[in-house]
Image: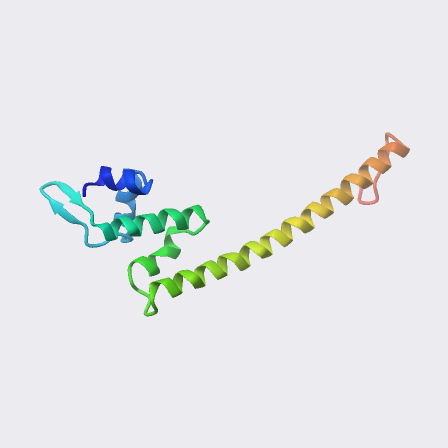
Length: 126
């Protein structure tokens, strides 16, 4: 099938599909005259790329999976990538929660100081 139909089926733009091919994420794309011809396997691969990007994966992270550079089965590699992403997100969430708590405490300090004295000076110079 041609690139327009692949774009419609996968939700990836024509430009993105060409970029995936340029990066080596899509290999074995045939030609019919001057047109690229994609297979059902390419469609599945592009859907995987689109879904992975939606979940925060970078194209460079996907290259080992989609190009077969990894000796393990690709789905085991995808599972490992998901687990790593989940761990990173958990750490990021904890960091953001700690930042939220610190901001709330700082806000309360400022509000308390201002309610006592509009010209207040906090301990750390503000």
